[in-house]
Length: 232
Image (cartoon, rainbow, N blue to C red; front, side, top):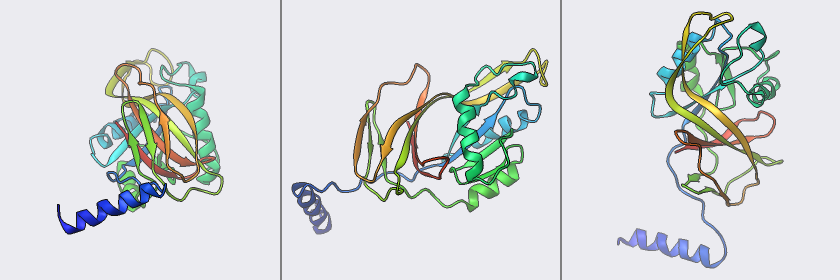
């Protein structure tokens, strides 16, 4: 052991003895791209394809949320849930949007772009500041959030479960009648686990359903910016 590592070990032990938990160290968090899409929207297939392309980047976490407000056009989205629509609606005032639309991509909860324009999406990713929130340690049965500076009213802890595979869905009615639409990283559940206030926090986690992965988004309330993110 080098002199430097010995000194660092001594500091950690001293902090622990004093009851002060050092901040967790972790990998660089990914850029989070949320696509709000619908199988009943004729403009959405190109955005779904763009999400498949973006999902191949190691520095990006993509999530596909199927909204429900286009179900009235004759086809009920097979993945749509009201809570996914609610998530998009909450974003719009914070993003200075008049109202929800599809296909919409939201980057790190901070900026938005039309989802069928891959060049604009790439430019937005490049210009978006990296996440600088606390470290997240997602274990098999426990989530640990490190120390950091939280917003004044705290931050929401979101658990998302999603299918990382490409899933193809044949569409029998509506604007995409006769098409088979490819999706990836389709969100199945969205759950609020509570509030982070800046202190280190341990939360027990049950397993995701078979075939699904878990993502954690630490985010300012009411559609605020994403502070930190991780996935297994």
